[in-house]
Length: 286
Ligand SMILES: Cc1cc2nc3c(=O)[nH]c(=O)nc-3n(C[C@H](O)[C@H](O)[C@H](O)COP(=O)(O)OP(=O)(O)OC[C@H]3O[C@@H](n4cnc5c(N)ncnc54)[C@H](O)[C@@H]3O)c2cc1C
Image 1 (cartoon, rainbow, N blue to C red):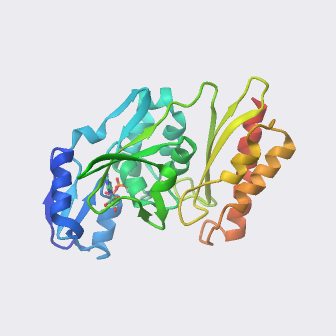
Image 2 (image 1 turned 180 degrees about the vertical axis):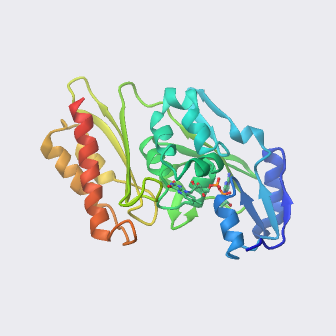
């Protein structure tokens, strides 16, 4: 099916893109890698007068580690997987991006497009939640930062205003000795959307007790979520079998999955418990 007619603009700077966005308002559709946007237009679910492509804004592709790690919104999943800066500061996000769809999807799809689409089944999103990442949002009044926990607001809905653009994702340097783990579990093929995605970071003290834990879950609620009750149960405790089982149960209790081709709601909740337990056991063993 062909695409409906639209005006196409691809400014070279973020300032110009913001000006186009402000001027066109609801009539503009922002395009990053185009994977979702083109499907929306082809299926006539979106009929924008103007497509605002961010593809010519070089600054939005940058990946830099000056203290914190900054990943430009237009960096592709494949670029993140290959980035030495990402590997040095937050390999968890590279691992998550490496599990997105197929090589073609990773080459075209961007981290910004992935999180702005706000699909609960996003694979990078749970990793960003576990890494305490922030969205760097550009708008007419300048830049603001928002923790990713507040960025995802509902099914396919973010906290971005109609005159704003996601500029980058900022990931603070994890504390020394932070252990991180990621799993994308699918009931079908590795390239499918997940039954459940679990990402976690755990900081242990010298005695081996858990100082803090962050657990991000994908595909098991209307948005990617943090399992905060499970995190609280772990804080200050040794990672014993009992503590791990309690936390895994609390993580499963935090979910509200729907049934789909990746499993029934009950199965997805149970797989959440199983994978949170397994990843915590793996961290406890090292
Ligand atoms: C066949 C297929 C399989 C996939 N499998 C997976 C998978 O296994 N795991 C997974 O996590 N994802 C998967 N995805 C999603 C994919 O990874 C992309 O993230 C997603 O399609 C959008 O990325 P994009 O760069 O193409 O963004 P686009 O499609 O261009 O944009 C997506 C949305 O974000 C908005 N947007 C984009 N960038 C910005 C910005 N900087 N500021 C404001 N708004 C913006 C757009 O307006 C649009 O609403 C899959 C997609 C497809 C088509």
